[in-house]
Image (cartoon, rainbow, N blue to C red; front, side, top):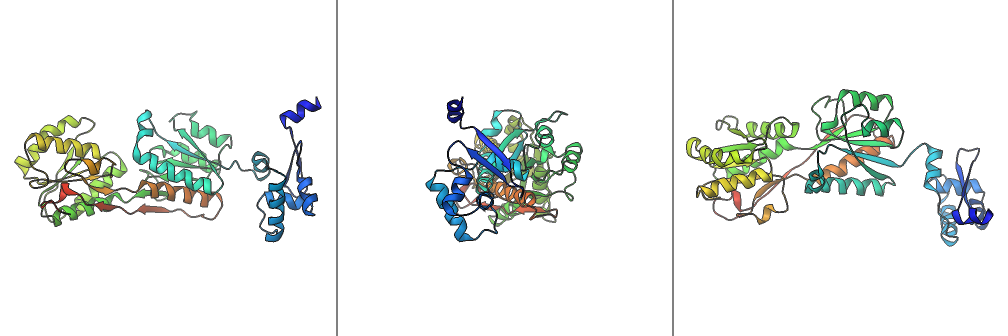
Length: 360
């Protein structure tokens, strides 16, 4: 029986009077570390738990002894002591696997994971289900995470009430459609991006800019439309083409806008739309950029390899994810207590599709 216990490395936990947890493994224990260094076991426990009151010299000696004796603290034991899981959840709103193949989603997740790991946390990704038994609700009720990063599409009154009742810190990724003035969120400055895009097209000599979007039902698409409208205020009548998910509609609507309304430039809300706009123009032998200029939101990796290469409003989703993680950890650690709304700057990447003379 004793041999079996040794093989399984059974852990024994005992709570010190100061609230720290002592962990023992069959082999090296906290007492062994304390004996080698010449300090009390509670001092070793404080070093393991990150207590800053221990001198640097003593901390270094203890850490050296831990390395020499090959001692590894049990993180689960420490978490039981301080009431934390060291786990952060990123909720997503995905209908299918295509969400995970999205380059911009991957950049945000990479940034979030990098920040939380550097801060000593682990990242859990969960798909939000808008139901009473949702995965988010379970994580919160069961105290399995220290905080949440939520997509703006998941912000609903019932969930906000739950998070408030359970005192669970959270940050919203993207500007929410409701309660935006009451929540902490971070988003790309989509409105500014549209203004910059229109200004660039006008500087290149294009006089009739049309906005092409899938719809204007989301906050980010509305912000892009608002920026477009503000940029054109007092200059030209605005024209917004909504194609929904049926991009084939653009095959007729784009040439019509050029022929009947004098459009000579298109601001596209994403790269897929930009592709179909270019295809529609080429079918009618309309030259890009000599006759019509094109600029798209989101600098997809393939944008630079289109014919001609696509000018793009760069949406820095890496910085978006990084800032969301930083804000959440600040809330978890009580360093941030106020509500914050932050916008990430955009930038135009100039390529041939929007340059009449063919030179940047």
